[in-house]
Length: 143
Image (cartoon, rainbow, N blue to C red; front, top):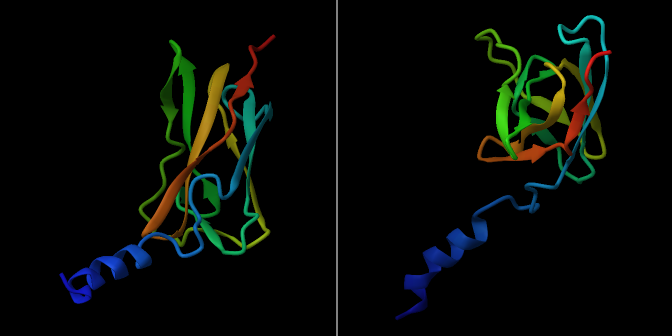
């Protein structure tokens, strides 16, 4: 077979994916639980998304400038969805932009005590989205 038959496949393979190679693990998602009298459970989490890359990334799960992570709770040796964040009005807003070397900082209320992790969709475009997960963290029992 001639090269012209393979050329479309070669071009498709070369052009697919993100040109900078960004994907899971490219940015850092940290969560720091802390007491918060304003939260129903008495606990909130400071959320940080650090972008150590040379490209701007966007937080897709948001409402305005508030990140809306998927919160999962450790149950029966696995993970169960605890919440998807607050409901957002049907207002279309651009995603939260995190510049190269930049950081997003926010805070969200947490439910009852337990072991949790957060997942946030990050991307360089609408076509290149991935999920970043925080390390597991603990919301302690109330005294």
